[in-house]
Length: 428
Image 1: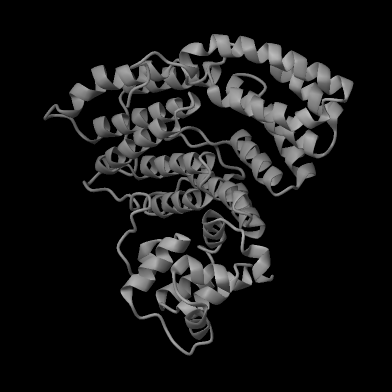
Image 2: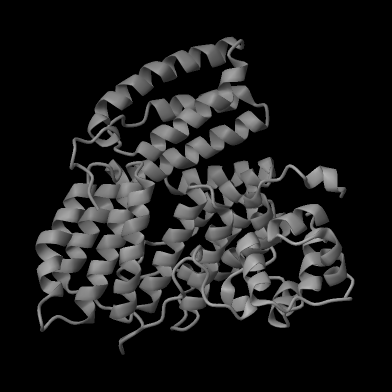
């Protein structure tokens, strides 16, 4: 690949290339040996020009060629730091301290505790109630209820001298849930703050699976906010964490699926498909996790993630099959999940230039419950509308978009309290 072909890439794109190499033994060996010449050659072979590499790490091209040709080696600490920061290589791979941009270090229990906490009946009843309501109604209108429960019921228990790891675990699980509900309400920064609060609580509880599950949530959020390299990093952090405890195949499958999503978004098809295959192997024949605090990850959830991976890799026939499989498995009981899968399917049909099928799925979406309190669903529907807009001259598309506009106005009115909360309505 010529230099001109890559000169316009943004720094984030270069980091995405590195994200896809973080599991490559050649890169890991080069980092462990501090052999930056080999590292630079790997990046160059992946299409990053020498000009871009030199510019990213603030060295001259002549010096870069010396490193790549083995005539000189990087010795200065500041250069290693520049390399780590330019390409988002985790500090520990280069023998450095955690870099400022890195997510929190992999979680390890700070107090002795079981592999997973066992909730009491009241805590589990509260979790189930919130979780079931969220699946049907969306998180928008439940966020305040979860925060109130945390503040009024869980908070006083945290300062009770007799409370133990189980209280910390339920606080972590509900704080993570609040983060998901904030995310579903369109408040991603707030969601990130909740996830970052939940992580040390899970660590203090000694609940390794819960901590790994929170890492998966952070991976999802990073991907949704346009940072695939951070999403890969969080997924691997979760896998490192879960490996320290008893085997939880469904949780490991979820983390591999998140890694596959991030790698696909980063344009790393081989690594993405490898991660997706690993997720399928782990989940094959296994029941969904019965650990109390973890959101279930089952065949339908894997089909949902597979459809998104395959769509992003432009393998549309396989993406369609996965989306249809997910819809069959989610026909009842999961209104929001069903909506997301139908949006994915409709999007795939558009990219296959099958407008009739896309519109048929679109009409099913518009017939769904308008009270679903999910800003994410509204925004993804907007994305589908934008994808169809260039085909407005086609009469069936024009008719669908007119119906879509009417349905969207109705949804926005019903979601006004979520989209535009009163001052103080959404709080950390």
